[in-house]
Length: 402
Ligand SMILES: [Zn+2]
Ligand SMILES: [Zn+2]
Image (cartoon, rainbow, N blue to C red; front, side, top):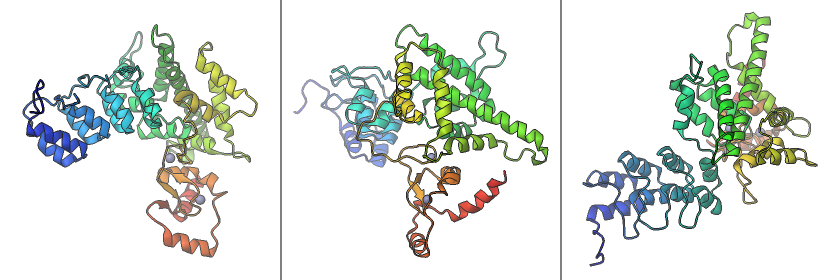
């Protein structure tokens, strides 16, 4: 017999490992219903189905196993990899998220003293590094959804906890992404509470007695800064509406639009003056001047020929990506690997029509003017991937009057 001192795998268990190895989700679903015992059994190498599924980066299978009560702390293979180590190596950020949400400790070390995030960095899975390093347990945010001290109302309503969590763990630090996230998550109505909560979070992080995470403290401060900038835009829009009450409530969230336009407005050298200004102001207002991240950011911003402040922030919080970074980014919100592009010039990429619309007031100045030839060939080759700009013109003419 091949196995002597371990209980031999039964046929179903063996097939389950086989389905996971082949990433056969349907086959796996069928088999798993026939399983009589717990899902934490191991193969000849001491690995569980959950660990294998994390290795494979199979989100669906990982989710099923977690739903079935798979133990994230189960460890029989000897190298002390947590499921997060395997997920980090797989390069799948969603699997990393599932394991983080399940409550894994991201600081757990494997047998060669590496965290999951360090393993991900080692193999160049930068999105996984960022996902893990930006993670904040949902539970730690519950504090802000309960009234504290003299408060009658909590800073964040309990119904907004999930949205608040999503907002805080976002890895893209572009001001446009932050504004769009607030809008999409329904958090715009409570900017005041959000701002206060982020302020406390920054303070709380820096005043911890152990494991202070300066990077997160700085990130919370930065998010708070963007939120207060949005509030300033909101005030300005309100003041304008008072002057012209005839326009009524048309476009209640026009302050988001105002903010985004300011952010994306390039000067003649293609630089983002407003972003540069608010980020530098943000650094000046950071209350913890002794910490490494503050000194690092200041020295970079005051260097001769400094990099754009947004890049300095991104590198400070999320780490340098090194020379291997050939990813493309959305020209509007900075999201990685957008899959749409301007149909006319094909030079700029966007996440979706909304991102393109928001950027058009700048991009129209440089977007290639089609000659009759080019326009014929582009419309012929127009794929699902590209976004037509002619409709956009129409939308924008409506918008220009706002
Ligand atoms: Zn975008
Ligand atoms: Zn274009």
